[in-house]
Image 1 (tube, rainbow, N blue to C red):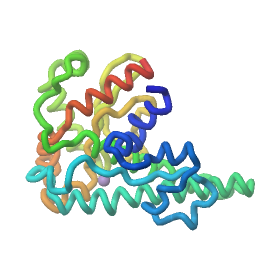
Image 2 (image 1 turned 90 degrees about the vertical axis):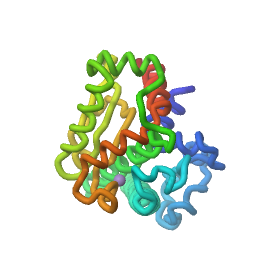
Image 3 (image 1 turned 60 degrees about the horizontal axis):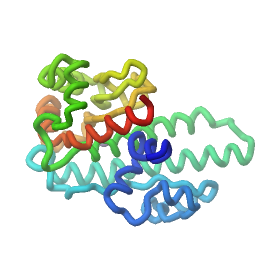
Amino acid sequence: MNRRDYLRSTLGGFALLGTYGIGQSLGEAASTGSQSGMAATGMAATLGASPEQYILPQLAYSYDDLEPHIDAQTMELHHSIHHQGYVNGLNNALAKLAEARENNDFALVKHWSREVGFHGAGHFLHAVFWDVMSPDGGGEPADADLRRAINASFGSFEKFKAHFVAASGAVEGSGWGILAWEPFGDRLMVFQAEKHQNLSPMVTVPLLAVDVWEHAYYLLYQNRRGDYVRAFMNVINWDAVARRYHEARRMLG
Ligand code: MN
């Protein structure tokens, strides 16, 4: 795996496309100049300035596969409407910045940079979120290295779990609970991302993320975010988390 593939699979939404056999991933589209992603985003007309398109990753499971933990209607709205909105917003902001470079007019650079931060973080974190869930998930990691890292960083899996559930449940406003690998100390960290632009240790590599925006749980759980986060623990795909952990350490360690 080269650095580009690593970034594609670990930090962005592209891994899902390749992993799940979508005909042409965004990365391939970008490298060949193809505009295959445009049909998915419906933004071809506004994106002429840049051939590179982010597209909505397909899921490796059906919308109803995570029930009873996460309901099908929430999954469908969340993936097809909310996540698609981030993808569209990111593509649009990047196109506007390409226009700005073309015209050497950066009057709105702050606005569009914020849009990239908001929609980019939304797109990438949702890609992680889908990737780390599975109808066969839950339990504890089987991977010995990840188990060791969790024990070294948090004391035990149970302590990690309590910490992760508490931190995710206590995110103020909308945001994410995140388990990340920190490359300088080679350790794992749990942190909160408020509104997903803020409070994020920038160099860390998210391995696991739970969406705690209300759209992620309100239909089934209403205000009971803690119940939702505890249910999320039952669908974590620890093999995917372990894969991300090993890829991160191999490329950046
Ligand atoms: Mn969301």
